[in-house]
Image (cartoon, rainbow, N blue to C red; front, side, top):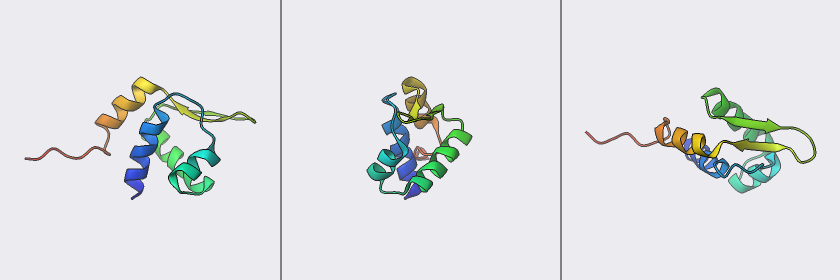
Length: 81
């Protein structure tokens, strides 16, 4: 379930817009703390995520890099033999 949420999060962030942690948490049905853990995990795996602080802050990712990363990541299904 978490893997699917992470993959969906990657694809959602690919729009390049800034998304608040609370908004992302609501969209994906998790608390803000879980969302922060997900973002830390994805960032640690090499996903190009930008974190912006302040009233209008949030998270965003580079569109072209994000979709390419999602296709080549461990979240994709393995090929059949």
